[in-house]
Length: 593
Image (tube, rainbow, N blue to C red; front, side, top):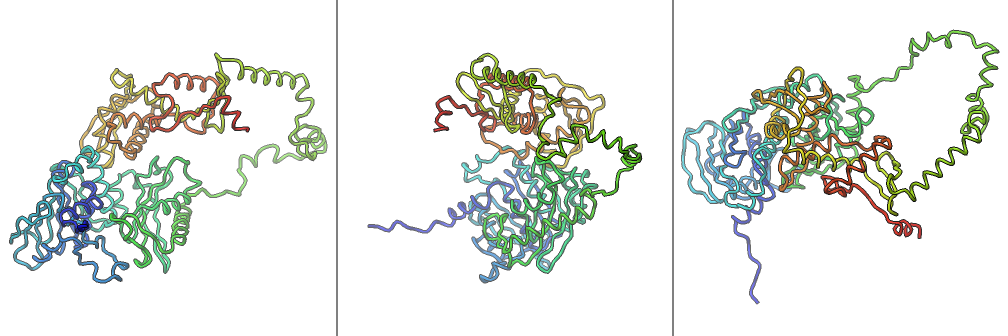
């Protein structure tokens, strides 16, 4: 038999690696900016065209590369960061594997210009499909300019998987934001289609947070700064009114590297447990510094997932540091043990308790119900007569009869303020009230999308200031917003004017309502087959629906059930979650046997 195992060609191996490291333009942006930081740059300029599909370019003033290094940096696993196995566990630089540039060069046209300080000339290299097309001497400023053109041009299937320009640009801005927050002492610029999006001068962390995420946070930031011989935590958390409906504004950095950690997020949420509603998430930008030997950053190609040597200690430290910060800045309400003056002035507090008052009090039903052992849960016979009990029994008996026999108007009941139950046609129905209402609203929005909708004009048009990421989303959705009753106009930069809103939006809640919609839309899972209008309708349905925990009257339950069964797809919510469970008489019988 002939041999069948062979080594992959370098070009193909690099394209496979690119699938792990470079998933979209934003992935390349992250790698390029981190390389610039490792090069000691104090000024980094990111240039984007066509959401990164046409051009991704990073220009830095770092130390640059020699002619040999400029050629070597595109070789797979060529790195200046790792010499021995021990170096792998003490890495403090952002990049270290030496696979990013090789992976990028395999799926794009790359142009590199670089020069070291003190050198008279620099080096220019052009690579296409992983192969060096040209290398020559050039005139260029100190530092490095790396341009990636036509990303995935030679891998059409992967290019087809990219989302809309707005979505891809939002991911680019997210990566830019994370890197810029990590290093506030570095000047960053971002230019998109020849227009400046960000120009961030050197600053402290608070100034950088406000510059990127919005001026409204300026008065809502609580500093965190705790240190032990084992680790240090610093940064800012938001006051309760800075919380949002999604986790969009939560940033954890370990040794200046952005990470995702549900475990540490839980530690933060526990610190805010008694301060925020269950469906909101606190704002934070937190930095943890500890010995690199106590973490493993080599568990994922993107290096955004890491393992801690002592995760329980870090969890407890984060939780404690945040509680202390909240307490120190009086965010946690203190307990006042002093008696309220309004209570102190009540007549009952100042007048004498006479024997006559005592005798009258002891005769009252309330006193006896709590003073006589085992009697507190009984009603006084004088309060409720036997006749009334019989009447109550008759009512209950008639209701049970209705459940079994009445088909026209089923009797509804609520379970755990979550499910609506009723019995009809020998079947027991349990309807999830929130999922059901989402379905109703989604179909309502879909039906009215091509029809005129009533818009309630604002008495005074409102100015809506946004951060850059959110402004990108709103610009994309202006037409869709109008279809559902929000009349919004672009006013230049990141500013918009709200001219009108749907009739069900209360005065004064216009901006809050829109912010919640945008926040939810940003972090909803984009489905390739779902256009932005449908995504917006799903988001709106989620925002406006009846929530779990709401007590419903009989009339409200009846209306919801009638509308649900009038839907085209009543059995599932827009997110494909069940709206109901139906049990036949036979199925109920089986549950007992």
